[in-house]
Length: 254
Image (cartoon, rainbow, N blue to C red; front, side, top):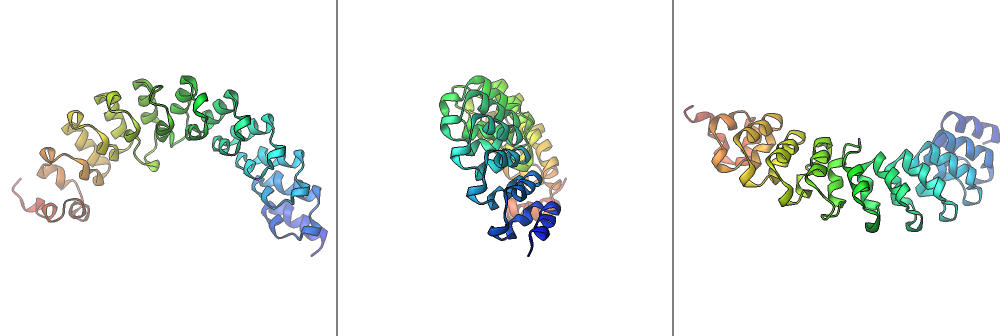
């Protein structure tokens, strides 16, 4: 393996730095690799991790901050990292977590609120997390201090949540759950029906939830189960959720 071969390989695919012999890794070669793929910083020898190489890696991928030595983590480097990937806040030293860096992190990804120090969880930062564009924004409510939560903040979060990340209504305090908020949560993810207080569940809410996700049938109160509602659900799901009781629905008179 020659230096020229390694350079051509890294130029084509930065991650191939992993297989370059240590004695052939140069500062220029490593810079080439991290500029193309920030994660290749993990294959850069510690002695070659210069401020310039670390900055290039983070500019490509904020999460590359994980591989930056603590001694090279500066406020500006950490700020760049969280602007690229809010969850990179996890790798920012506590001493460098400033209101500015934390705010930028939750702007990029509301879930980064998990890594914001409690003392910095201000209404502004929590509100920003609740309305960020990230799909898991609803789950950011889990990391929001109850004293800071408001109904409007919760509503913003559940409306912007993505069902890919699971229900988020469980993180809303009971005293902030209103029919409007619960309806919005169920519209975003039908399985949020499991966390709607009995006093706020409506037949319309149940029908809408089951129509969008048949597995939500599991969370429909017994008194709202009807033959018509259960007939909307495929037999295999009905049986799984309700046992033998679900198998007789199609046999009952309409």
